[in-house]
Length: 99
Image 1 (cartoon, helix red, strand yellow):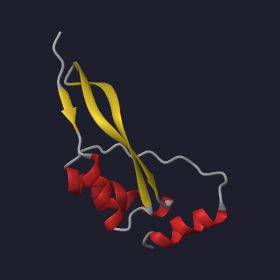
Image 2 (cartoon, one colour; image 1 turned 90 degrees about the vertical axis):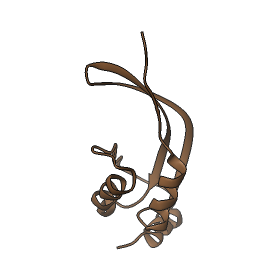
Image 3 (cartoon, one colour; image 1 turned 180 degrees about the horizontal axis):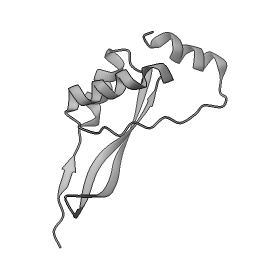
Image 4 (cartoon, helix red, strand yellow; image 1 turned 30 degrees about the horizontal axis):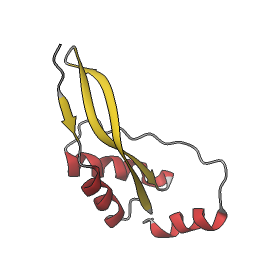
């Protein structure tokens, strides 16, 4: 059984997201292996998980940025609710991102 490995460059994407003020900061978690079905075959992707700290109001702009910058047709952008946190840190994220 053959596999196709695709490696995504997370560092440049992370930098472009912060430079565009679409996020206050991005954590890069290397060594993630994802497996999904594409074109009827299992594909293995070696990639970095990007944990992007931003505001809900920027999700659409972030998704479009990923499409334009990396050529993703369907970028994986998932929003998780924040139910609490260090208030100064949450304010910092708010102040470091564009309106």
